[in-house]
Image (tube, rainbow, N blue to C red; front, side):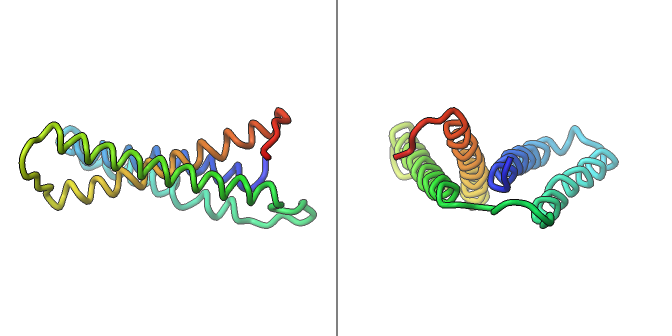
Length: 143
């Protein structure tokens, strides 16, 4: 498993943690302060420690990235960006058809939409990277 695959697995962990933060924030009335502190420490460990562990350089290891890795990363970013843009366009047109007339979005919901888009982008990017590496392991052609 190379550095890009480890980063993609961390991206899935990061997006799941960020989504869980939003869910727990929405249900703050059911959690006690002690539980919130414990969850906060666990999330801090999940979000801060893996980048340091991934960035460690081990002596005698092979090349970190080659041309195929760069191609996989480039394609994954393009696919994730197009899917997130498509989802945002679909969501905005759906709300125009469902809610007839002038529509205004509160600022808090707009921030939530941006936050959710960020989480979806990280998730899609990580999944597409792992799928492309799985295709490469099977021997499928990319060209």
